[in-house]
Image (tube, rainbow, N blue to C red):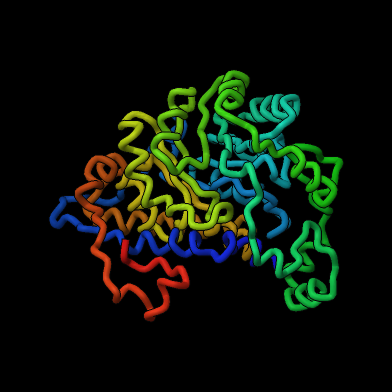
Length: 381
């Protein structure tokens, strides 16, 4: 049940599959005898802050659902690796607690709330907690249709239906973790209200009518580096720059919202072309390997957010699991850049368009003749 919540996409999960498949259609045309000398220089800047890695753990909701350490585990991993940390406004760990654990660069993610006083209160806490950047999620004005959750009768906390009890018995480690620790709350909003009671409140606060004028008001209240998270169209990116956002965050919410939304790696080059070379771009979506991160940096991203990889690590082993997950990606990225012939992030960004090329489509990319009809991404573009 909890695994499906983490692993799933919207509707038939076509966008989820395409988001992963899209990377396989990008070939790495490596340079030889590039004269590189280890180590590869992976240091860069995110929101103007120095970091040792060009990727980081995305803000994701409800981390204590997966392991009792929750968001603190990812914060400790960010500290360990010297990279950015992102905290969701629907986190199960408070802003102040994260601020005490992690003194490095942090971005606070915010949804489009109706209550402006709530918004002011939350962003004030974020500033006090040492968060130097804000990310406004704009692709969550409606709740996506995640059918695995419906089939599993998923709820926070569990409803203890017969099916859920059977699932709990089959997953004793998760069940012990859940039952042996305090109930979790959405700690960035109200620590006194249990997550299940607050869920209705959260749904009532989402503002579908939130528009560019509201975004402009928010930027005035924040008065600092800010990203618009959920951009997939060049014209929206241009409007966002004109509105005052310093960073474009190319994302489709992990393919969990609008079914058949485009793969983020496919739209990334058009966003970069639209906003020019000087506007910061973060990209997430479908990233599972260091080679995926390498391709995103080469095609226009300044940094890359990862979600599921570190959450799988969190579920498996808490802080050590997240540290291990990010280390796997670091090693893979180091290897990919070395073999590609790019000695630094700046080199990769400068010459990436020469090194990463889309391969022609082929019927051989499909596992069987009906795969395309089922929504398998394949290679025909």
